Image 1 (cartoon, rainbow, N blue to C red):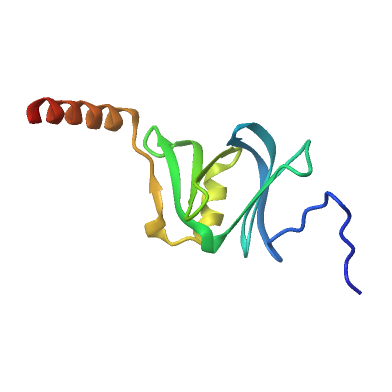
Image 2: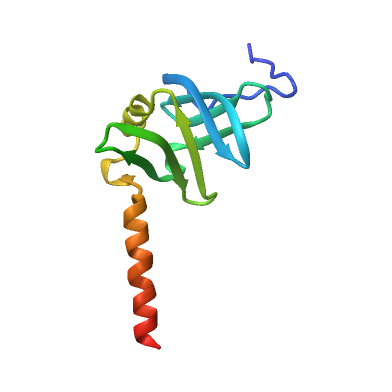
Length: 135
């Protein structure tokens, strides 16, 4: 017997869920909800608004970018860069567990660290001097 879908209900991408945890999505405004990592994709569901959700199939994920601080001890946020729709940024209570669950479905060479503050500052500084030299 087919399952009836009520208006406003969301159908999950996943048939098997590996991890569910509380999270924050930084898309437009901060949204608080739950992250689900499963066999077909990455999903975020808002706690307050049923229609506010993000579903990213694994085929669509290009890179997973982790912001790593203090020598790998702290991961305040991570982002999923998709092939077509841009970058989605999240944070969660257990970021290492989320990244390990994602690593089952995304290759190691597509999981990268973001640049640190000092690396960005150094890049800007050297680019500024290259522009001045070129003029």
